[in-house]
Length: 322
Image 1: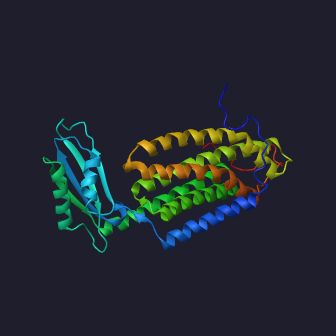
Image 2: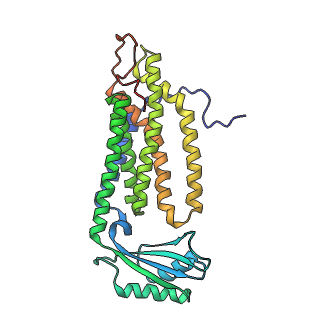
Image 3: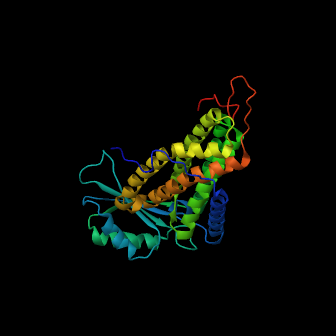
């Protein structure tokens, strides 16, 4: 007996309350944007600047012990990771400790660095401090600019891709869904003040790809059904297409979420922000591919020219392979 998250055949009307779903999405986007303007993001070391201390010891690294020693200093955002390298010896245990710049300062002061080293030496007697490197506000500003450009270029590439594969109405629907997903993800990080660093940018780009994949699956079925049901209203074609792909959409999303939830619970503090962004992105990406992208497509309409001998449906670029 096969596992099914939804019935084999469904006939749900996804557009009976399309204005309500679009209204909820618009409201959430406004709240997210307002939160970003009022609260801003809780930038991590990558974007705020700070200092990285590289340590080495013969004693195996216990991140909990390291963090406990440093937390007593109340330095704010501190990231501790163990460095793995096949060239390291058995008695060569290396860690990277990243400390954010304190308020009103461009870098971590020498006094703070000395306090951190003293605290760690108290719990790990043989610890050595191999190097100390600082990231200033100028480099951090450049990273923010580069991150914004990366996300915008990804969305722009999606616009061109969908436009060529389908039609401009499909492209605008897909891009609206992507903007919706990215903005809501940034908004939840702003509202909850979760640390926002380069790993979250990687998550945003991954969310763009995931959401696009889900949307293209639905749009492909829409294009097929536009050929199959030549006289059927676009609303009915969209409903049939979403219902036909719903089982695949739910199975993909749920299995992805199972893996992400396991990582969130067991993966530790280092990747928790990235995994949280992915969990949120999968949820809103699944929602937007059904209720946002398709609703925008319905609102814009699709040109269907059946005067052509080959009766291509819905797009002059229908035969272009991705």
